[in-house]
Image 1 (spheres, rainbow, N blue to C red):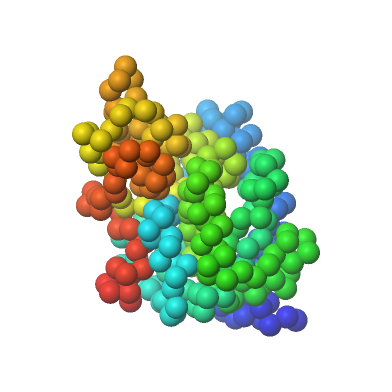
Image 2 (cartoon, rainbow, N blue to C red):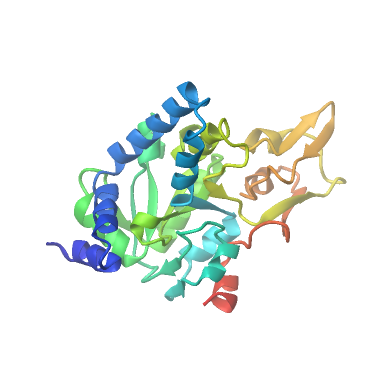
Length: 297
């Protein structure tokens, strides 16, 4: 048995069911996600009228979900040079879900990249496929040992990972940190996501047919403010926003703060530098490692 597999089993203790789920999830990443995506699509398309489906959706969403990250908070993760362990229920202020909310990064300089199962399942452009990133030795080592040839897993430096992040953000892809009960309730996988090719974001869209409040992703904790003197109403923010939070109608800009996920893409792409993020006290706490280390350890 490989060392990374032993560590995986040890992490789950007596919960052999979760250990097996974890093993299957990463070892067969693509068929696992392919199945889940098409299951949600079929349920949303043909069975939206079935009331018990809502219970299934809630069960899944509190056990597998994501936290959307601003670029600033993403960068701090890929510049981290010490272990971070924040595993108390206080973290629910950051990751507002019942079960998977642990912020645990061990050996964060040990990073791997492999093919994104969402993009493969949804036939994304070839250049986007190799974009799923693991931060930390345990998951990264498992990917390298179990998924190297199958999913093109490779080790990268922090600088290379950050370059990959920036490359995707320039093309309009946001970042999400994923949490899953079956992986120990911790984060560690960060991906470059787009609404058109992300199963997590698509699952939320499907789930809204059953429950308008359903969301597989927690917002970043930020909202956007506009300097109206700078804004030229060019429509760039409307085009880049995946959530319909920014709209331009007849020369008037509208902003829906509740729909905004605080991903920061509109801020980065605004040609007039008219937009900026602010910490929104009515939203969850950002996954800002400076805040985590100061207040959540």
